[in-house]
Image 1: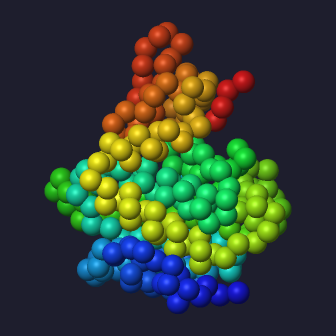
Image 2: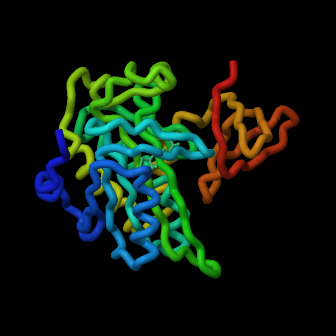
Length: 256
Ligand code: BTN
């Protein structure tokens, strides 16, 4: 079934996020469409939504499984100042976690840096592309994928590590409810007058802290105790020799 955009609109409580919706039945990636829109001056909050992506992208050069009609693939065009740019990677997954709780009654945790987990499996991922000009962001593209009514078993590559709302709740849910809730929660966090409160709320949900982890980033592997996150959201590892190392991005796996 196709998304009912009128229903999404009726559920929206935002001032600008999602107030202009670009809806596509199929596209390679909503990030690319959003980039073109942003380059052409799209108003802040423009959201590009697709029923299907034929070349959906994840972080670290991965692909994002994007079958038609069952999930949410959305990219939001933003024009943040530097303080807001720094919290995007926290605000977006936190918004999804809150939305999943309110729309489906599931309890969601976050995996550093910006995955949303339910029952230890990945339900949602966030991809942020920013276009800088001088020291400022000309725009940022916040891409969010949420597995909603997807039967994860359909894709053998992710079947053991991913999940969907349907799988966790035991029944399908309205994608419109989840999408509107993500947009509502996101705008509230993005416009917060206290970036440190957003960071604290994100940190409070991080499942990664306090665990022995292995972090892979640009070919280097670091092992240690995930002790903290700094103001930028970098993960602070306590290494075996007692020293600390802050890592800005990467892929975390649990050790032992
Ligand atoms: C990740 O966890 O690696 C990030 C996944 C991000 C997927 C979303 S779906 C909407 C937007 N378009 C894309 O091609 N990717 C993002």
